[in-house]
Amino acid sequence: MSIRLTIRYRTDSIEANAMMTDSLESLKLKIQDITGIPVDSQVLLFNDRILSEDNKELKDLGIENDCVLHLKKKMEMKKEGKRPDFTASMMKNPLVKNFLKNPDAMKSIVEMFPGLKEEMNNNPELRMMMSSSNLQDELEMFSMNPEYMNTQLKNLDITMSKLENIPGGLNMISSMIKDVQDPLSSALKEGMGRGYRVKEGRKIDKPIEEAIPGAPKEESQLVKYKDKLAELKQIGFSDTRQNFMALMACNGDLEGSIIYLRELDRKSSPTQKAK
Image 1 (tube, rainbow, N blue to C red):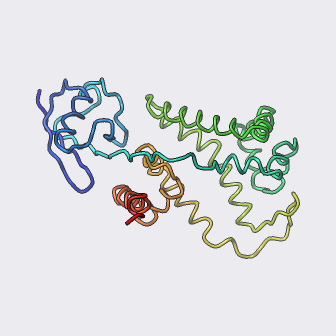
Image 2 (cartoon, helix red, strand yellow; image 1 turned 90 degrees about the horizontal axis):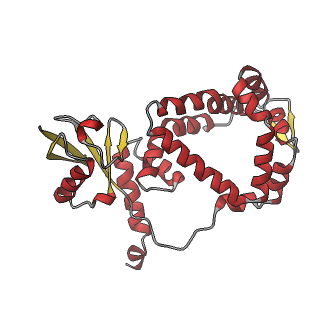
Image 3 (tube, rainbow, N blue to C red; image 1 turned 180 degrees about the horizontal axis):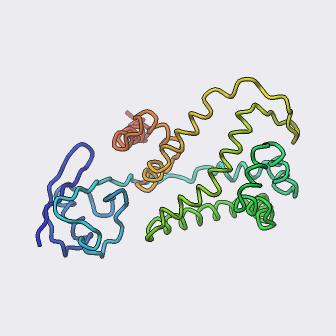
């Protein structure tokens, strides 16, 4: 059965005809013929998910007649020397290393933020994580070997990507965030909002009358754009801070942010600088 599809790329809408039994790779080849974008540089999105299983037929992916697919183009990775790793530099800092080696580090964090202790009492998963002996072992490994931390973070990214691609994976990730990350963030935010200052590992009980201006707003924007930040990273924009600034400048518009980032990349390219 022949179907008609609409491919949206930037501000253009492209019509493409295909068969329900065509593979995703076959569709990408047709898109390559129409747009000139190589198959390897194409990122196709359908129903808020990235289509990556090239051997699957369109009908198995839920693609039917008059469906709309969104096309993104992967950013060419710059062939340049390895940049200094900020995480590795931070982990080599003597203050950070000593803190991570301190067995009472987690206890100190809890004492700094009163709201965190309350959340730990109410949330078994969070309490188990914070009091786990494995956590202290991991922190000590981080202090001794910064590369180990980078490896663990990469493994986490891979695991999260795999979770997103299995049925119910997104719900599982949302549940993990709700059970651990959200309570932890709320508790830390509450401590900062009350105006507690930390000095030499101890808190001053007298609160500041006015909360830090703008802090909650910035945090809410990060939460608001977290899905789009992940999508930009998947497409090939690896600088999270720059991606966030682009989304802020474009009021969360993904297409506008991609154009904004490409313009920044063009201006910073050696060829452009030479001009």
